[in-house]
Length: 602
Image: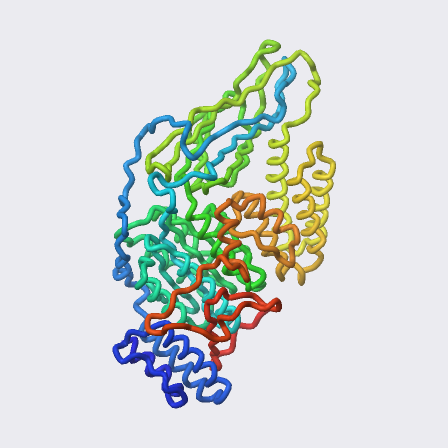
């Protein structure tokens, strides 16, 4: 079938080229590259014939698409090289282990408080993971992954965008290990599954690369259909790698998605799968993607410069490869009156005097800070040390494969007869207060911007900048936050500015502050402070993978030779010039859809 499809698609090309698809129907990478390049030449010679050729190609692809309501065939994922139990045997009360990859500490804003009166105070519960944690017995290995790329191939993705998207996906394919599995789904007006969850051994990489090369842009944008296909694939897996994720990238908007996406995110979570959203260019719906990321407890990534999509995908993949703890449940037992827990992760408050915060996963070398606001009791003797909170965490250790619990740690303060104890606030507690305040102010400024209240938004941001500048604690993080707030304030001057890259940049920054995670470290043109913010939250593996994927980096793994071609030598494989981005020796394919106009860019 594939051979017949290619014969129809390249009928005009065959009259101008002696290169034919193999007669056995097994199309290799080299053949597809030459076929795509010949198609591009046809467009320049005879636009009318290329138009008919393009129309036939999409009509045939459409005829091959399966019934979108029949997902039974999606239970066809490859077997794992090292089988992982589908259901974990989690102990009801795991052993307490202080040597696991995750540790927990507490801090309090002021160590001493006046005796005889209650006082509002902030405390901090921090989870840290070991940056050097490795899978037990596999020091040279990383976590095997299940990743499904859900890719927007609508008309607005034509030209350079689709080329760079292919480049990014091929980077993921090339960097995958034989234990990883990758699936590919595209969407425009409808969704198509191009690759089942395929193990990335030699044959799997070849099949995945062929699928990527064949991608074309055209049609509308239905984000929910693409996500549904990926969720169905994850739910119907017969086997599961322990770390699974869906990467969803779009440059467009889908007015229907707001109604269909939330239950799909719930299903993805129940299937043990995270969802990362990537907004491409200036015209995507950053509000939708930001809301999706918040519900999925992952960071939203704004890819402003199209050349950076590979770095964003690479950083996200690198981070997932370094997951050391999953299903983290932080329990806070409060002896003081708990006023508020400042966290953006789900909380369970059904047990009186106790709060449980649920964090899906943590990467090696990462931290999560839970800011708590309490009122201390008035009674107590002078000089007495008072415990106001106890904290512990249960989690699934990816290092040992066992359910683990940290030792309980206490948050204490000291009573004193001094009515105004002389002390400076704890630096780390102050920094986390600033982080939470800035995240909330950015969220409110975003709401005001959507309503056209730009003067009110600028005033709000100005007041936050003043609070930061007058803070008793001024760290490097404080300076980063001040610069970020001022940049947003200066750019929220009009609807025109807001509807361009500014809104997406604000949602990106807010998401990073809330999740304390970034997928990349690259610079953007709209927010010069973004790189500093990202450096605060990018885990070591995110930084190294993002750097490895950056243009011109010699560390990028070279793609393997095609199945039947000894080399791919050509202009597309030359070293990058200083005037443009590198494709790291991955050949570029330029395709044109002459019969269908791209969606209008705003």
